[in-house]
Length: 114
Length: 113
Image 1: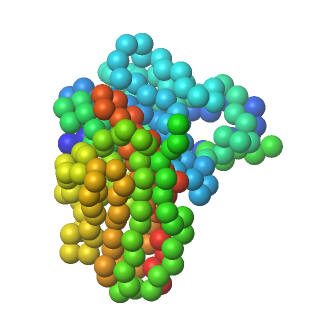
Image 2: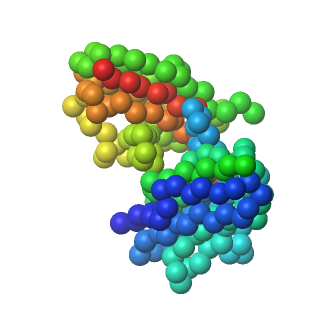
Image 3: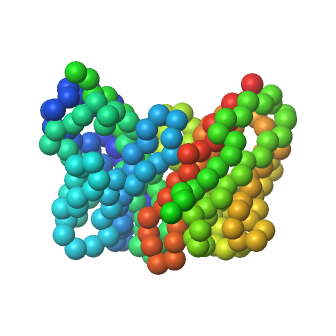
């Protein structure tokens, strides 16, 4: 069985500061990994994905994530956040055998303040 | 390209009433998903369709929830009768052939009183 752990339920940060949102997964086989963002009263928007290849993945809005197989992690980073980045961020995993069942973490609330 | 459409956006009902949600996926996307997102949690898969067939409904509470996708395009999710614990956001998502990423609609926020 696969599961996703987001270690921080809330991350407060000042504008223009760097941020890292942590995600760890457990799976006995290879996985595909995703980060989604959810703004208030909206659906989920795909930020970035890792399917194969380079372990450093760049996404939209200046976000990037690094796949670390040995540590089973896929942490999300941004070097300088903006007020508009305030949202809920979800890490998710697909078991490559099923190729479609997405399992989500519980989410991390990023709160950016001046 | 139009995204995933859902309606209504908000719904308030009393317990034991029935409710239905509608979803129109991205054109050409054969796979459609319904998720339940309870406040403070990640989305949980309720049912997955491939065209008009059910692929996975293992987490759908079948005594009160039902879903259909008769023509392989639009889908409806129904709850009858609703319970207080059904209060959540119901998200619809679709996926294209050969792709792994899912595209989500804006969701329907259901409040059961």
